[in-house]
Length: 558
Image (tube, rainbow, N blue to C red; front, side):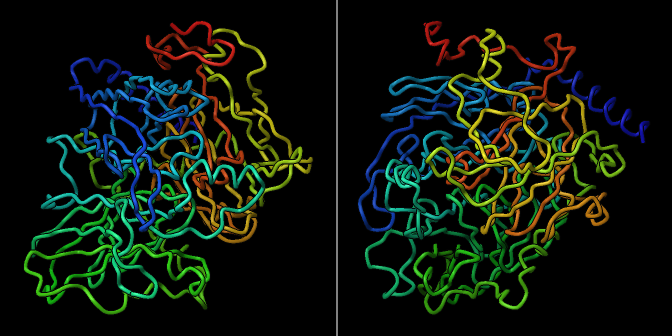
């Protein structure tokens, strides 16, 4: 086992060092102007957050190893940060766009992110990470394409289609924040949007007239690559296209074993890529549906996103009932079985010219295990808070590595418990002291009553197991040790657990958080501090020249 771990570390070391100089890689530059606009996605005027005047925002298209320069202009009336989940900032947490890594961009300021899409491909999205702003928009797709010399494991699609689906409230993010600050639940969303627009009027009783809807125009006899992102607050959405198969091919940067589905559950914060063939007779248009899962269907009936797939040779408008959602009334494991069926395509090339294989991750010694348990929100010091292992995270007033660099004491503690404790929940700035080059097991135990989704910045992780009940060491016997999917966001079903394996080869401080925005806002997050004790400037980048200062270091800002 030790020999395998040594081989793994050596391989990563060689690949990493051989790519340290990326001065000859192309640079892609763009600007994002983030501002308010008044739109009526559900027929009621409201203030949304647009990017470059678009809602959803501008699609950023780059290619593997491109250097990416994004100048973000904050035209809001509050602080702003843009984060890039799933885009692995190699050695460069300074550009990650969360409070533990970046000072906020003040209103009417602009700040330039600079990072490299190093050895990556896939479908991702960006969004504002502060102040519950994603509930009002500010999100857009981020696509990393293969280099020409690296073939994709399927025929080149005719075109790409990006679909951003998500639950939506007619109250803006500031009103939703006040609801949470007041200790109340957000309640049922007002609808589900597809590409920033409300539902097609498939039912005159449920859907008022006059709502703008999304129409996707296609040519018959073609194959399209459809990139679908759940950018909502917390609702799991079942995605389906009437009379069309969804061939799953990629998720968050990893090609999958190609599998056909008629419908697919996409959890908050997740991204999937499907191939869809326009092989129907176009007797009419077809419904594109995103409907809520694990809810009372009668009460949530109006909370359904509906768009239209329109063939160029269509003979008439879409009509009739929506395609049926999955029925798991008598078998609650239906969605989990679907999730378990997602396997990594171990023979497909990724970002490099040669097939990458699985790295034999199942034979590498685990250096540490973290069992992270979440419960329903609790009252701490008179406020409703969410916690992991009894710690509800206090937002920092200065990025952690900036505090280290300037020797600012008391910013955070490196004492996050590696397993659940019986102590009374507290609010604290406690991070995980993770060992550089370690190979760790993280067990996410969900004792909440709703699906919880987790994301780790800076890394992909292998999802090796998930089940209902409480995790124990015996649960490792059910792990997938060969072709588990590697990604950056995973769901944890209520009353269940999900186990992931992570190779800590990316130095920095990286956010581990709930992708359920309400839980994240209420403190369900922490950070992994991954520091090379022999750091010599080659494993972690220094602060950028344009670094922002805030909190106790605000006086340094020029």
